[in-house]
Image (cartoon, rainbow, N blue to C red):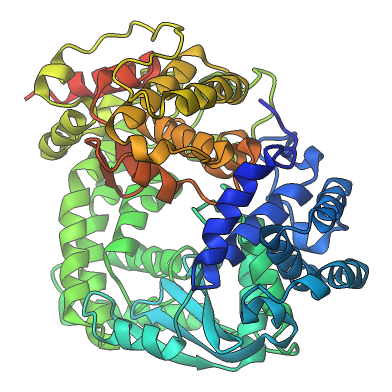
Length: 595
């Protein structure tokens, strides 16, 4: 698998066609995203990808790469409006005075045909900052609005506040903060507190969240992060510094002790046995150290975290003690939310979550909760990595709890499915396989290595589709290193070309099409693993040389095909598009959920 960043796109007409489309958009957002993504790809140090578990490159604080400088020089000589637009954004985006002078000297005299906002990037100014924080405090989105020649662009930074708060996602919006807040206020499904922020404090907080995210394992990867980090870094530089980071209340042992005492004296604890004090103290502590930091605000998220992971994994005690915890947890939820005035619907959802998690919690207690212990070499084999690769201990535990354990039946532990969950699992399996009949007839025969099939494809687009197929096969072979995945990708190309030939009109760009098709195949086969750098969507996209995220193009390609896309999981419902490993996982789950 190539660890180095992609070469600059070699097919200039393809690049210009893609840039022309985003340049024609009345909103600055698509072009800003493309510039950030291309700048990120061209400045990633090739050594950063040598370890699949390395942290995301901080390209915004590193010297410009030779590859990027060569690319900008070629663009300055080409004098195309599309590449001039990119250059002007990079002149502002990168904090490099020499690059800025070179670009403006070459481009300014020929930029009159470009939109006003592009010619006035030096006057981009911050307008306001605010945040919307969930009532329970476990998540928050910060917004910083900027004006680009009167056009609003708001950077949204989504933050997870469980344990150490860190950046979970980041993306630009072509709207104002006032409009975003009105939308949130009108949505009862988004209970949140509006918090006004100074521009300096917004910068300080976001910079801290980014830094925390850079040290998380697994690293954050979304459709827009980390490719948007250059845009975010530029926008943050426009804000005043010297801001303060919010300091949460530090609960002392005496304060927690008082909470426990008050809980035991409350009506909710009257029918609970004597070990309630020990459970309550641990529950409050988990909410402080791993949760939202608010011991008196509880919802389903905290319940699932504690019952599904923290308590069975971290608390060592006999079964009788462990099995008495859920009763105490339900009482703690009622006591805490009543005392803090938390909305009643969160108490209800938390209690429902306790009931739903109880069978699995009991199973883990009775069978022991050691999910780890899988040898690193076995996990490396499952991930398609060299057997001698060194996996961090924390990652081994996380992958094992995800079911990636060589001792659990090729990545799946059938004991993890309870009778209560079997019906829901079965419905999902039918969706993935394309119906009950397909599910029942699955086999583990490997997909054959085969040439691209042109059957059913319109002659009007066949030449360009065949040209794409050749590039696609070469890329898939190099990136996936699995002949079955190459076959799946080529079959998906046939599917999309047959059902939506308009997506392959003359002049379409190969790199984004390759990224979209590999995204479809990878999602359908559950190939992507956020914890492994070499198996992330971001790595695939950069290796393909795409300048924008593949999701939108993939949906466009599939618009006339049958597929399901829920919770970031895509299913085509066709066993012929699944590798033998993916089908084996489905068979294991099928056999564990026989009705």
